[in-house]
Amino acid sequence: MQPFRIVLASMLLWCAVVCRVQGGALVQPKILEPAEGVFAKGKRSQILVGANLQKTAPQVVSALKPLIAWLGGAKKATPPQSLPDTPYLLVGLTTDHTALQQLRDGWNTKLPMNGLGEEGYLLDITPQHIHLTAERPAGVLYGILYLLSQLESKAYEVGIPAVKLADWATLRWRGMHLLVNGRQDIPALEQLIKEY
Image (cartoon, rainbow, N blue to C red; front, side, top):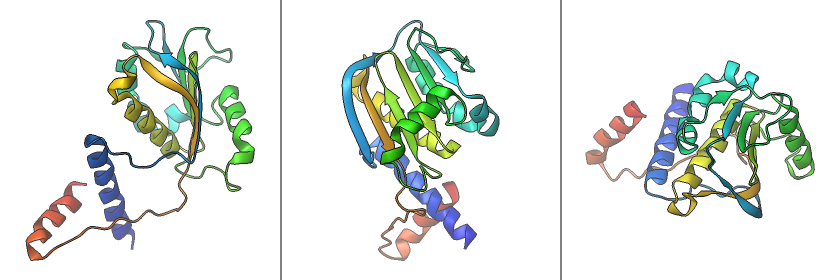
């Protein structure tokens, strides 16, 4: 059963990549509250990454590279207790910083009873900061992917619109349907399984 789940997860990842490349939207966040303003990239922007996230999921932290490039080569640092006055991006698990805990606490009444789960994330974008948090590293990754999808649009070359959003997986396992028309499609399906 485990290899079957790995194959399905791989196919879903492939679909996500194809949809992103083709400009399609995978899902809309469960909760989306637009706000006033835009987080504009600035020369003094910083990226602050929580220590717990850095220790437990360095591969998720490496997914920040496109955001670092968009911010003009901003340096990654561990967040200080007192956050900076200049624009910054704070990314981490809910246990990484009090600002991230406060973001989580502010959403408590709107979230599922069992929390965000493995893949859920919270995002708060204002003109001064971007706070991205999750209970697990996979959630942070999905939040980063959401931010990257916003940067792909030409409309956001100047900045990312201010918004508060929350998203989580409704189902623990996600399925996908592949249409195989006949034997001629089997080699392509095998290649898809091997590559992804």
